[in-house]
Length: 61
Image 1 (spheres, rainbow, N blue to C red):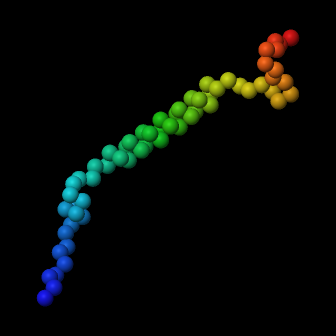
Image 2: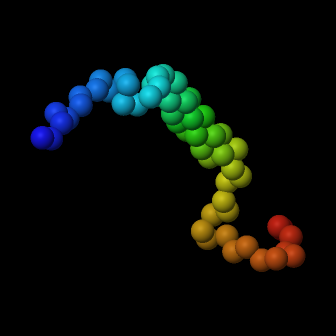
Image 3: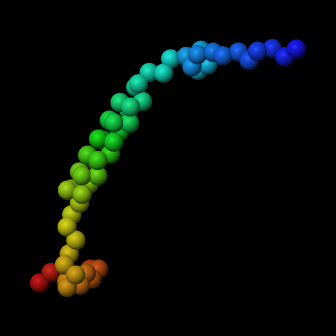
């Protein structure tokens, strides 16, 4: 005769605790990534106008 299947709780099936630290790590990482991108965009030098040709070794008059 076949044995009845055993049912165990999800805590015992995981064999450990599941702390919610991951959501904090993801949130902080997202904020830092957005701050880094904003800093790069604000600190980047402006590009020259499209009408002004850029020539290596030329000086502005």
